[in-house]
View 1 (tube, rainbow, N blue to C red):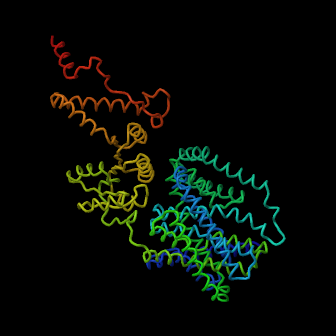
View 2 (spheres, rainbow, N blue to C red; view 1 turned 120 degrees about the horizontal axis):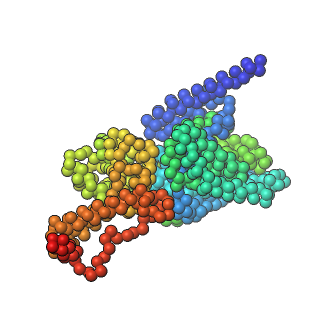
View 3 (tube, helix red, strand yellow; view 1 turned 90 degrees about the vertical axis):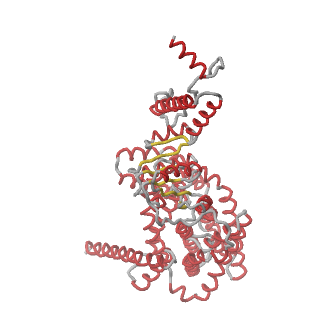
Length: 609
């Protein structure tokens, strides 16, 4: 009998999985094709499956599983943010983000006090709970638009990150607001010390343990072990933060930031991405499944009045705060329309508040229904942005790759790339060029160049630009950091492509050789040699002899570079990629100060004699 029951439960589980996957397969393409976005499709699929099929009885369980998709999303976002970049965003995070939470929470709490009969403590929980926005919905909308790295995307992310930080003190305060102070004992100095200890351990582990761990696993060549290790790190850091009384998403984000400078970053992102996508889809469908239609049917008038009012207030306040923060009108509008919804953490906050008897369970259900409806309307609010922007010059343009793909893919089209491309085009080669500067793309298009806007540090951009067709990728970007990121990504994802790379300086050349690129050249080497040769000619040296001298310098420079790359010139025993080459002249200055051509002539005369 027991075995039969287990079999029935197992069968029900597979039916649930089949139904959810079927809903995702049907809804996502339809809504994507209609231009409404996949998020709304998943929500509608969840809502439709709940009351109709009655096969999904574990909506909350699915929601808990789907929240792991949010955790993975924050981990991937963390991978894109190096600690230095995060520090540079501190003003937006703790300035704009904190202002949004405090101002919006205060305004909404006052409105609840004035317009309802709720007590002050309940009004504070409702107001600040509704002030939070959905990280999952907002970030997915920004990703769909390719706007995560644009100005308004960074501002929106800063606000969302501060909200994730704020959920911890919000949950800690709830026992204090409970009638009679039930649960106050849970807020203690010991718990505070535990929280600090967990955060410190995660930071230390991220800095000193994770890279060696992934290096050992990578050396074994077991790809499935790398995937397991990536999921282990994400889940472990998330649970550690949860034990510290903070959000799981925050733990995953910190782990991602700690690995942002790791050489395994791109592989980790590629391994996590499929899990993130399917779990986020589950999360959105679970939100739809958990929506209590009976509550909406009973309070539809209240919901119809509250939802637009809530979204309008949040949008107006977000716009005003962004403008005070120094944002342009268009950026402020886009931030305001991507963050007007309630957040997934509101589900937790309102449920805990109901358990603490701050308000009734029916009130919590109504609030959760309001938050869910605002989430469902988010894709629509995002699409309203073009109606309110003034058409200011955007910092990016649309990524389109129609007709892209050739034997040579050039990344970066500044002065170096423009000259190099002329040689390639004059030789009859087909060249696909991508550049991340919208202004440069617009400027060169006026002269008839066919180049594409895109960031070469993104795998999807390289795929769209036809890297799998390319035999050679010419990396002509200017900054060393960006160049290294592109080289690392291509070598890990497209190992069969030959890399020709513009290096920043001598040490960068050594680093690139250590990574076995096919060819590298310092951006100033040939121009400096030509400059020196022409200067020699102007002093009276014959052009042929000046050319020989320049060739000799070039050969000796290459010999020294090869020795440095092999480590034979390093005295400290470190890898040449990490031991800076000490600048040395190839030719010692002549003490007599005589011209080199005269000295050579004298030596030749002496030899002849």
